[in-house]
Image 1 (cartoon, each protein chain N blue to C red):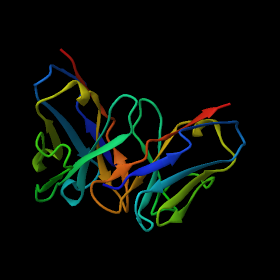
Image 2 (image 1 turned 60 degrees about the horizontal axis):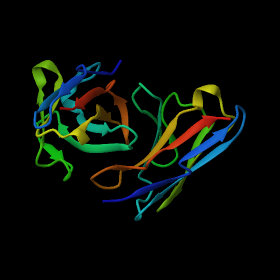
Image 3 (image 1 turned 60 degrees about the vertical axis):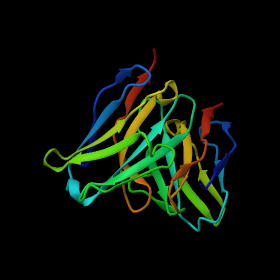
Image 4 (image 1 turned 90 degrees about the vertical axis):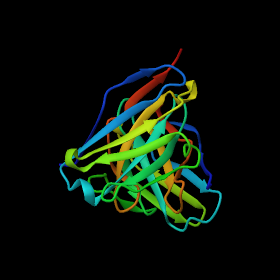
Length: 117
Length: 107
């Protein structure tokens, strides 16, 4: 069965960077994109962008364009999201998700990133 | 960016009731509309895509309709496991955007 397993919670100070991993199993990793979505406390879901797991091309939401980088390691069937210059407003659950026919049909369990001095 | 507006922001209902949630897009998105159910501590669950197609495994008491800018999610005969927050998402154009959510609470 398809599973996306994310790395554990992170606590960071403002200005630092964080990297979240998303290990895929149960399907051919390079055949599907991986999207990243976050949810800050009390806020709605926010799409950050996506990476083509096959060729590594990434597209970012303009909001995060300057601070986020998506990469993948095909040998490990793992996608990564790195967010830099962290601010307190970046405190959120970060999810990886696999697109289906439309929308995201498989999601990781979420990774809580807390940013505080 | 396309703005998605859901109403109501919260609704109280009882087991067995029927509930309708609406979602309005700031521009025409045809039928590129998705609905999710989200419970605390879990990942969002895809319920309906392309406005009205039920995701595999989703009970038939969930239904969706609409086109253009106005969409609805209806849950008939509410079950205890249906109490959650529901989000719409437009998949018409990047950046994908979500509604602010509708919290369905038990009366």
